[in-house]
Image (cartoon, rainbow, N blue to C red; front, top):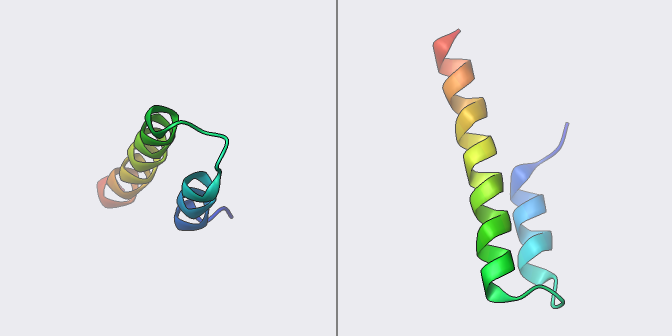
Length: 43
């Protein structure tokens, strides 16, 4: 099981990424974690 928080921290620590890329990646991770929460509530 992956931990989205650690993924976000890894993205933010990745110095090769531009701020725009970091925002995009965090947005994807946030959307994924929100979808997971929504699915759990829907069940």
